Image (tube, rainbow, N blue to C red; front, side, top):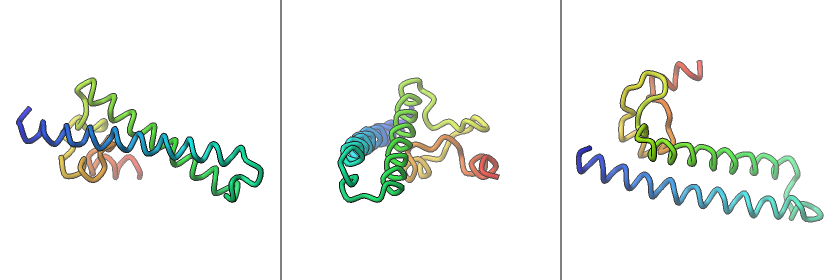
Amino acid sequence: MSDTLHESTEALRARLERQFQVHTGQLTELTVHSRRPGHGGYDPDTLRGLMETARQGIADTAEALRRMSEGTYGRCEGCGGQIPIARLEILPWARHCVPCQQRHRG
């Protein structure tokens, strides 16, 4: 692994770890609100949506961190090719390169 790629990967790991903490904190806070009378001022449907978004964020970041530990981070799950570092800098939890992501959605 080149120094630049290694440095980028370490920066992405730190970003993913921070993101995991943020999502975990959000889910904890929202869970507390969900148990309060009046849901802490949240509309119940909005609260459920926010909780699901936080759960998905936890799952996505945990999965990316697992791939880093296994040495498969940055490899497209569709074609097996490298996911460009620019894409990972925007979406550090990305599992697919852009062409495979487009096929995956379609």
